[in-house]
Image (cartoon, rainbow over all chains, first blue to last red):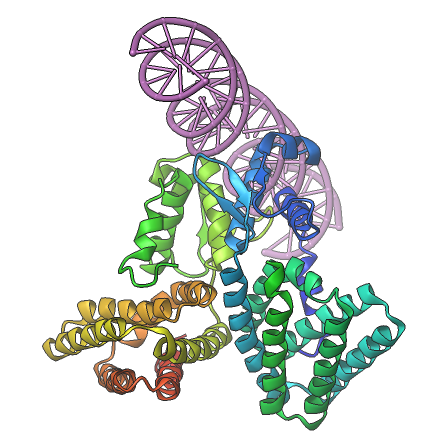
Length: 224
Length: 224
DNA sequence: ATTGTATATTTTGTATACAAAATAAGGAAT
DNA sequence: ATTCCTTATTTTGTATACAAAATATACAAT
């Protein structure tokens, strides 16, 4: 496995995209960006028309989205955008915090010095964005940071599962960082992560990352 | 959430099964039971004929199986049964061991006395099957035991992820238990689990369950 | 024989057509 | 008006038909 490559995902993703995949991506975006609110019924006829495709690839897309947990298909009764209960979100964050804990420990064991260096640079970028108050770039870098930790843990299954949960939570996490005071504390947690990374202290890194996630829960729990 | 119900899964599964789901189940079985070996190309025309359905539900089934990680769809080039590399299996077991560790700890915190009692009974049954040398019933009870622990951890996301990984590993695990000496040591690990459960010692239970999985790796690693 | 190229065949992807549900609409009876 | 039943209408599920790739085959040139 080529772990030191900077773009392992992109390399495989070049595979020609089938219509089905494009549709899945578009619907996914609609859901994440809130154009299709949780609980909404997914109207095949209008959506199909809007996307300009036939029902066949559309329905295949729905199947994959259902498997990803973004959509619920109720046989003969249509599909709806999955609505997360507070309990759903808690269970995801609880699980995710343990996954990140594991990822943190593994990164310290398995990543090369250069890779750790790369993570720290990312962290510095984030900090700069925070100081400038550039919320969206910060958010993107944050995503990138976590997904890179996940990569560098060198456990493909772990990476997949984390990516899936992140995708489901995407909308909610964005919400969580929208209040400035929360932002400050999130940043300070990231400072701790960077410190642990520098020392390659897997135990500490794992702890902070887990804590970070459980704090996220506190931030969002009342908005669900 | 109804956690004390003995059959929460079955309750929702009653939902009328669409053809697509039946096909997915059948193909899944074919894969798990080894009738469709890893790496085999999935020939739509023959499979479709064999199952007596049209291509539409069949292809939808393939999509869900792909999302579950059992099948790989290469655009325009057909689908193949996913072949697990040693590294794949290791990454799954590494992840799974941490998930079970988490599940073990949570069960000790969250399950009722009656539920723990139920687990212990299951354990006794397993032991009886082991003494009689009834391999298949033991295997089934073992599956049941682990999936029940997963249930009683009261974290739906955790349960889903575990179930998915278990499904992917099913064939391999079956293999792992096929040698008698391995069986004995697996049983002794289960004894330790039961002991920890009786004391509600989450830490200990988590440790044994994780260890149990990593031993599984040792058992199977040369057969992949 | 080997390589290359053109053509035929198969396989895959998508659209449409038809069947079977489910839902909505329209009365009749109370 | 409310409930029930019957009949449209819409929506969902599945099969088939057509289009576009990919693969295999046949043959010529070297």
